[in-house]
Image (tube, rainbow, N blue to C red):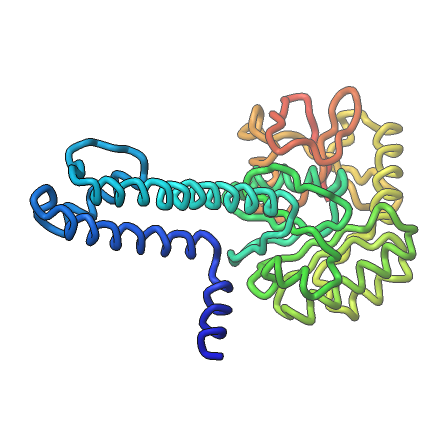
Amino acid sequence: MKSNRIFISWLKWPLFIRIGVIILFLILLFGQIIYILEPKQFTSVFEGIWWAVVTVSTVGYGDYVPHTPLGQAAGILLILSGASFVTAYFATLSAAAFSRQHRYIEGKVAYKGRGHIILIGWNEKTNRLLKDLQLMAPSKTVVLIDESLKEGPLIENVHFIRGHAADDETLKRANITEAESVMITADQYKSEAEADMLSVLILLSVKGLNPLAYCIVEILTDRFVTNAERAGANQIIGTSEFISRAMLQHYQIKLRPSKHQNGINLTLDQHVKLLPVPNDLRGAAYKTCVLYFLDHNTTIIGVQKEEGPIISPPLTYKVLETDQFLAI
């Protein structure tokens, strides 16, 4: 029974470790055997081990060669047995590396880092969000969780986890306990009510595993906003309200785009203002302008160009002298 337990324990070892142990055993064994069979040719055990390594790897330097029939027979046995194990060893390593890479692309490899951002759901919004995050924080790692993707997007500093985001095991593979922030987007394949219910369920799972995580959740309908607040959302993005307000603001800006209205409120609910471009920001990147106005307690959401407004232009967009900022 004891030998059976030992054999079972041996089988539990990774295959490449087992093959490596066998190769090491063969090298030591045949190094000792050749030293015993041909002491004149191999003056030390180390020389025998060296010959065994060279022979088993099929390199064959020829600096040590057995001359007796017994020594040559030992060499034949070593080549037939050892070379096959060495080939199997490197084949196993290659297969393991390929398998891990394939599992990584398929989202089956757990993330071990900390201080990362978890982004739940794959759609055009998250695709653009990933690009903006890379511009703002290039060194920040984003863990993307999605169930619909077969393979993750090959984007730098993005680790893909495939699975249901409300499942604890999926969140644990994303190392939720060490995450800094979690962004939950609405499921585009469900109705608005179903998507909101799923978002709240995911939020509950996240807060249950990491109460300190800063959670931003997208809610499509007003009736689920309260549920998201109760579930612990730190920020709630009301998509329907935002889109309707943005469309109204675009319409109001189109009606009254003249330059003499700088600083005048342009919406019915007194939210958006047109601000001129400061001299220091002419030709600057939009990202620089956003940070500048934040330091002055003002948030800009876009740029009013001569041909029309642009909400959330690319962070690398160069602001022109004729542009105006949309500020709230």
